[in-house]
Length: 172
Image (cartoon, rainbow, N blue to C red; front, side):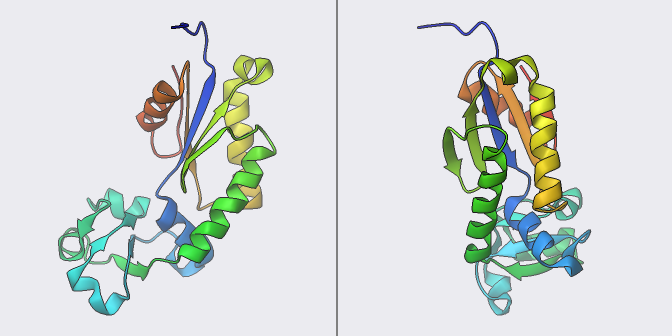
């Protein structure tokens, strides 16, 4: 097996994707603890929070947490019903913005992707990460942030990506 002598991969993970997309689309949710649930809010007491905003996470809430438990930790949690159509549109718009800076090699999920670095991007990974973040902020919105990891292979880049969440850049 070939051993990489330098970083070769970028891994990008959007921070609190579903909740941040909802905050970007609905300005009244910005800066507030938001929990995205799969069903109408009338059934909230029997379901789980599938994603939460950074404000909700700061209050102790987590993804895939029962709504009563999340509300006990954060009584001001605002529950919103998922919007798959909105998430798909945001995903496609974000992929287009990233592809303007670097070709997307693999889409791993709606909120994660991987890219192969070339000689230029290997030499200046921080500059690439900043260009991607600036482009997203400028063309999509400030609510949607991402964490980026760089490493010799995709797995290590994914792990590096998780090191400095949210909105971090890690080079291994």
